[in-house]
Every structure is written in structure tokens, then in C-alpha cells.
Image (cartoon, rainbow, N blue to C red; front, side, top):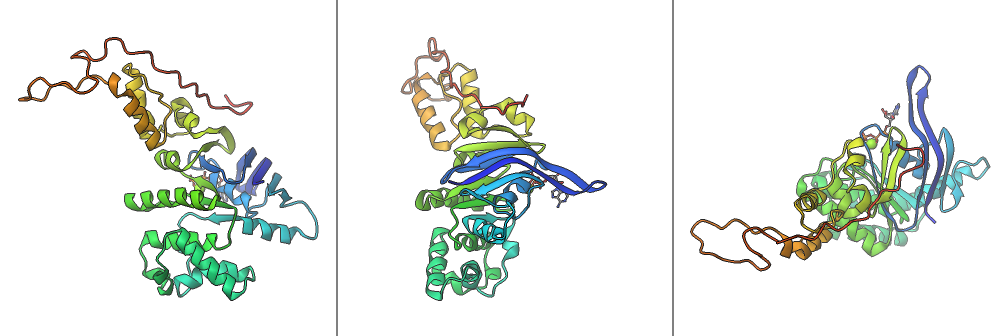
Length: 330
Ligand SMILES: Nc1ncnc2c1ncn2[C@@H]1O[C@H](COP(=O)(O)OP(=O)(O)OP(=O)(O)O)[C@@H](O)[C@H]1O
Ligand SMILES: [Mg+2]
């Protein structure tokens, strides 16, 4: 069933003191197994929003449901409902490695299942499964988490959340502070996790290329409201919309855009690297000829139609992508 948010408002502080209306009426549903990115400028409310998904923050107004359980409805069982939401929705904070504390990697990952009251056999099974899911060598279990690299520490922190066996994994800027290889490895990890375990992934990110690689849907926040919510190909190819949220389209879209501008028939809304590559291969016969290399005899490339390039390139295909806007948005 997933997560359902209705009319969510969140106000920090009190009037006159750190008062800030961080969320101003958010309606959002995230289905089981979806891969959703939450993007938007600094201060737009992304972290505030995702901390409502597992009941960590309490709405000032509005409703949050996890698998049909209304987290904040009054009643004597509310603490049980909140505990259940925290089990079903695993939240990985920014710089989660700062929250590692146990003497060994194994104990750190075992913390949540022990806390849930699992017996030791079940704890062991969950720790092993979580380590395998994040690609940590079982031998690392005996090491101190503080003797690992930054990227490995982050995997330990993610494994600690996965050991609760949540149905939704929410990560708040999971690649922040990692080097390019560490970022790439984490993106691969999220793709594999989703593929192998079917878990829903909610990724808060500023990085359009990373989002293009991981998400199928993008929710754009601005000033505590949803500015757009749609398929990743539509949102990340809408340069005007992105500019309003201080983002630029991913490199794939910018490259295809440039080709479309030059009359090459490509669908510019191919955000994923593999899809963009396929688009380029299909458009190869229409690409202009490369200038001859000095000293090279006259040579034709496959698909080359002479020095002036294609005689009359077909019109760019209409990508037909429009981002569904929320009512009331400009
Ligand atoms: N504990 C707090 N007390 C008061 N105001 C807060 C608190 N936490 C966040 N805010 C304010 O609420 C607004 C939304 O903050 P939030 O952290 O959700 O934004 P964000 O989109 O995650 O930003 P970033 O991209 O910088 O992480 C901001 O104006 C922020 O200053
Ligand atoms: Mg944030």
C-alpha cells in the first residue's frame, strides 16, 4: 500500500522564535516498490517531508498513513502504530555514518533487529542478509566500523536500516560527501537493492544525474509545496521547471537537446544513460559528418551522407512529455 500524505503542514518553532512553515499543504502517495526522488532547492522542505514518512516528525496539520495505518490518529495504540511505521519505513539520514556506535560492524547492524526482539538466530540471519544486500564482505563484521572507509561506513549504516527489513527505504542525500567512485557505487547499490528485494526507494537528492539513474518518478518541492510530480523523463527534461527549482537537466538531456536543436531527430527526454545511448545509436545516421582529420585521405563513415551532413533531416520527434502540474501551480 505504501505511504500516503494528505494536506501535510509542518511549522517549526513558535511565532517569534525560529518560526518557519516548512511544509504548506503536501499531498503525496508513494506506492509499494516505487523509486521516487524528492528534489528541490535548499530549504524547500525535503528533509522535513521525509521525516514524516516514519513518524519521526509530527504534522502540525494533515495526515500521514503507512500501509493504511494512520500514524497520528488519537488512540491508546498510537505508540504501537508509530513503532510499526518505523519498522516499515527505514530512514537513512544524511551522513548516517555519524550515528554508528557499536564496537563491531556486526553489532551495529544487529542493533535494530535486537531492539525489535528478534531471537539471536533471526538477528544473525538479518545481519547476514543486510550485509550481502549492501555488498559488505562478511569478514568486515568483526571490524570496528570506525576502521572502515567513508563509503564502507555508509554501507554499514544502510545495512543497519535494512536489517529492520523495511518495505520502504528513504535516504536523505545518501551520496553527499562521497567521492565520484563512492557515489557511483552507491547509485549501483540502490539500483541493485530495488531489483533484488523489490523495496521502495525514496531518494532525497540535489543531483540530477544520480536521480536519472535511480528514480522512475520525481517530486519537486519548492517553498514547502509540490511544484511538480511526474515521470523522471518528463520532469528532468523540463528546463524551465528545473530552473525555477534551481536545477539544470542531466547531462544526457542537455546533450540530446543540443542535437535536437541542430535538427537531429532524437527524443530529448532520455534521462537514463542507457536510454540516451540507445537514442544516440538510433540517430547515428543523421549525425553531421565529422570534419576530415588532417593527413587522412577521403574516408566515409557509415551513415555519412556527404560533407553537408544529412540532406534534409526529419523533424525532431515530439517527445510528448509534459509534466503534470499540481493544481494552483503557475
Ligand atoms: N529544527 C528546525 N527548526 C527551525 N526551522 C527548521 C528546522 N529544520 C528545518 N527548518 C527550516 O525549515 C525549512 C525546510 O528545511 P528542510 O531541512 O526540510 O529543507 P531541505 O529541503 O531538506 O533543505 P536542504 O536541501 O538544505 O537539506 C528551512 O527553511 C529550514 O531552515
Ligand atoms: Mg535536507
